[in-house]
Structure formats: structure tokens, C-alpha cells
Image (cartoon, rainbow, N blue to C red; front, side, top):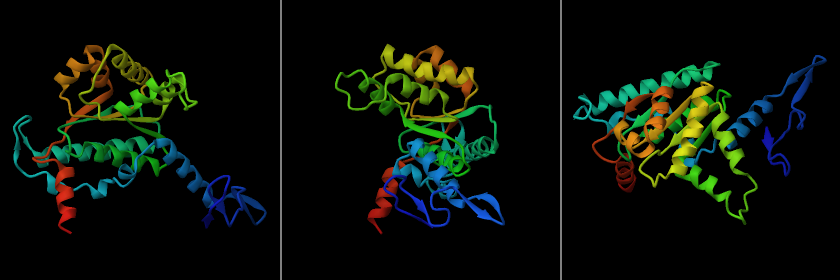
Amino acid sequence: MLKNDPNEGIKCNICHGRGFVIKDEVAHRCSCSKQRSLKALVRHANLGRLQQRCSFEDFSFAYYPKVMDKELGFTYYENAQKALDAAKKFASAFAAGNYHGPGLVFTGPVGSGKTFLAGAIANYVLVRGRQVLFTVVPDLLDEIKATYHRHNPNPVDETTILEGARTVELLILDDLGVHNYTEWTVNKIYSILNYRANYQLPVVITTNLSLAELDTYLGERTTSRILQLCRVYRLASIQDIRYLKSKEHSLE
């Protein structure tokens, strides 16, 4: 139905770019309009290629054995089941309409599937027409810092970047990990979270830090906002899932 257009990127053979078709003397919205809207949402979401392939259906429990996770007193499998159920429930509620409930924090070591679940949430709500911004925390901070450079080629300023993160329907902050947190970086993160808490806008966070470590690196007021905004779920595997997958692919 759609083919390349040098201006819009897509052109519909049915409505020829008008967005509607006439049937029985009545204007009907063309099916391409929904595709255009979805393409715009995906562009805005900032999902990488790997995250675009994440889905709840592809979440595999093979990496979460029924072995005790001593930190919480449950098996790795049980923790993964709880995290997946929470992700599905949140995504369904958010996609259904005007959601102002708590978001999610997925904690756990590197390569435990946290980003996969966050990506699955993003894709689920995107195809249902909801707005998402998926941003890696260090990249977001670097993007803000770049606006201070005199010869910054990016025309977007700091206010625009922060406003986008504060006001988007669903914000996903990936990799809130051990970084060089200065007073400046902590203030930027707090500014975003505080706004979203005040306006009851949900956020999904992935981090390899425990709550105690978050308090150490980000301070009490930022951690307090996170706990106000989100419910916390631990996701862990005995080995780095990315490493295990790379071994599986090498054997194919």
C-alpha cells in the first residue's frame, strides 16, 4: 500500500497522501493514517534496533533457573515471573487509557533482562498508540551537556530535551547505573522525576544498583521520588544473558 515519498517518506496508493478516502459520499480515515501515526510514535520513542525487537512473547524463562536468589529469598524463576507479570499489567493498564498509577523499577545485575522488559513495555504501548520516550541515562545527560558547547551542531537546546523527558506520556530511563554522578547530573535527574511525580506521569527505570546504592549515588530526595513513582522488581540470572545468547548464536 505504501511506497517511498521524498517528502513524507511514505505515500499511499489508496488515498494518495490525503489521509482519507471517499466511500458512498462519506469521508473515511484511510488505513495509512494509523501507519503514519505509528511511524511517528516509533521515531519519537528513540528505541534502538535491539529494543524494537523486544516483546513479552519472546521473554524466555530459560535463563532464570529455579535456584534460590539469596538476596530476596526467591528463585530466579520466581523473580522473573513477578517482573514479567508486573510489566504486562503495567503496559496493559497504561495502553488502555488515562493511567496515573505507579511505574516500575527493574533492578539486577548487568545482562539480567531488565532492558528487554523495558523495551517490551515500550513496543506494547507504542502499537496501541501511546507516546513513549526510551532514553539511556548516560546518553541523555551527554545530550544535555552537548547543548552547552558553543559549536554544538544540534539545534535542540537543554530546555527542549528536559521538557521532552518531563512531559512525555511514558518515560523509560534505561541504565540508571554507576556513573560519575555530580551535583549537576543528580539535579537534572531529580528535575525530571520530580516533575513526573507532581503531574502523576509514569516512569519505567532499569538499574544495576540496589535501593541502598541508589540512595548513595543519587541522594535521598531523588531515591524518594523514585520510590514514590515506582514499584521495585528484581531481575537476575546466574550468568549474563547477553553472553549466553552470544554463545548460543556461535553454536548455530
